[in-house]
Length: 82
Length: 96
Length: 395
Image (cartoon, rainbow over all chains, first blue to last red; front, top):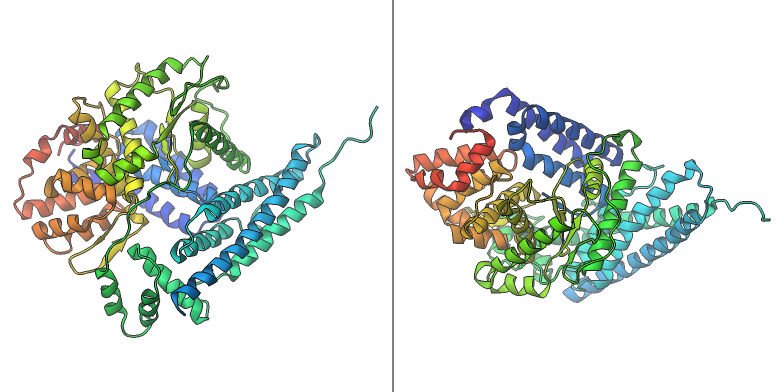
């Protein structure tokens, strides 16, 4: 598969939509909301990693970025996860 | 308002903020020490103690940065903004 | 014989909560609390701070005057005047929180406690599955900038990691980092702690991502997984991870964590939506460094980000990109890209990248093809080939 086909695939588009939605929700979520969003994306990526590890690797950077945002919201500090 | 006045006003605000933060830290430490020193810990109070620990961590971090930080207007103003941001995060009423 | 068992005094908790409430009330009254606050002083403060944040400049009386005139018809003129002023962002001479080895260990313990508290506040999130057993408590340490437990089954792995950290540290010489960052790096070297899996497990449960390395901004503390042993990861792979974390710290010292640029229209861009590109830049530079010392890591982390950034590197040149990466100032990069591919291309690339690095790659490839830029050398780059392999894509 080439990159153009990958970004047009429904699995990719679906994941992108979810990630955009979580990022948007995190902007205004309170602590409880943040924890819920964290659980949602953690479960999503955990299942994706098991079912389609190569597709997961496409989104690994965005997964970690979501977690960094959660960390900052809950602790008030920045972190770089790798 | 000239630059000196901006700087002085900001420093005054920071000093006032430091006092509030320091007072909070002391009382939180008293509450946590009391909790830690007691065998019987009611579950109903546990979440409130957790909340106070989080506040303690955030306030202590801010206090360290504030006491060690540069005193130029930009740095002071940024720290005050950080403090506002911290208080928005630990808004009382959402916890426990 | 004894009296009644001591109970918790709820009044102490109440007094502490009241003090916190008073502090948050105080915060609400500060001029920065709301951009809509009526007084002219507050408006001036907020407007000035917005400009300062955008342009990394100092608060001066001149800026206050300019910021007040922003509210009239002079917005564009004022902004352009400011853009022409020198970019004084210069990174961090010293992080605000400089840690010794002991301080870093205490920091790690505090972070584990914090994570456990976050988990405890949401009991439904605690999983009964633990991937690994918690390791025994640390008994002693070598006298270096690393924290290594004795009597720990992982300590032989950690010794290897320590040697690799020394090796990678030796690669970050003056000629690589430049004099300014190199001086800062030597003055305040990073402190690495090697953490047990329980540390990373707690962070995953609390914040949703299983990491193998952490860099803590505003400090010199790096935490690595002490279980990165040679049976699972080659020396090239662990050296790459170490280089990656070291580069995060070096970029922090140089200002690289705050990506900003002025485009060919004179518009200033900066902000947190650039974080993903910073990660791609860090991994690409770590890979470049490891490859330049004769090693080939078996995989590329953040492969989509690296593919996209490596194409950018191909267009603008390695040294120019490295300077921009370490300082955060991408104005030169914007100039070069726009010169070759058309005005506004770099701005659009960064905008697309912030939500999809792969879309940004396709975007740049298409513009590159239109401009007849030869991409064959880029495609043959072993890092690019590995990244594509990791993603399972052919081109």
